[in-house]
Amino acid sequence: MLTILVILTTIIGVVLIVLLLFILGKLNWLENATNSLLTKIDINPVLEPSIDSSPDITDPYFYGLTGKKLWSSLTGEDYNGVNEIELEEIRPRYTIVLIKALAKFIKENLNDPNNDDLDIIKNIRTVSTSRGKIDIWLPSNTVDKLHDIGSSIRDYHLSKSENDKSDGESVVASKEELRASIETTIRAIVHDVVQQTGVKYHDDISEDLIKLVL
Image (cartoon, rainbow, N blue to C red):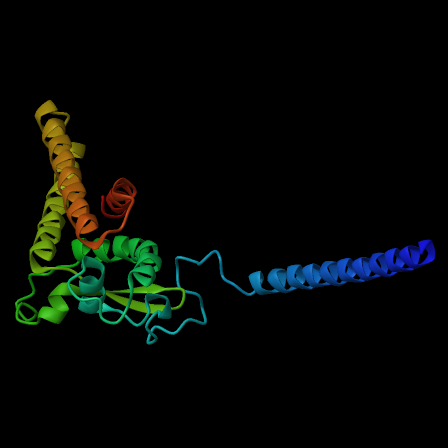
């Protein structure tokens, strides 16, 4: 009887050792496979387009959404075939291109009479990414406000030039007041867009945009 117990114990021990070695081998394989996969994933997307990226390809990281469809999906007007999980992936990427688009709207002249009746030209600016391009659509009232900021910035730069020629305190005060007004307006517009699209980092977007246009 004792011999049988010893044999059974030995067999069970051998089986357990084999199973343990098998499990350790699988864990090692899984770790190697995971590391191999991670090396193929771009976890640090570059903000500027790479040399090989084509300007004619829509950035696939937005799940095919671009222009007004992208806006309506983020604002919940029409999901356009994407779900909330995909939208949560899109929002951080949208934050980056939104800053670039807002800067374009501010810097470009939107009062060209030849463009007034072309809504797609007035309301859309195309932004390049490392994977292609994306069209950023904004409502007309927002676009008009951004154009007004552009005009204010031109006045601000003119006031700076005048200040270089004069040491008057009134000129300095006027310049500083104008800059403060521009910054306040930019923050208000950004806050409105952030609220509508559900993206985050209102303060960071505002500060980055101010640095780009002022």
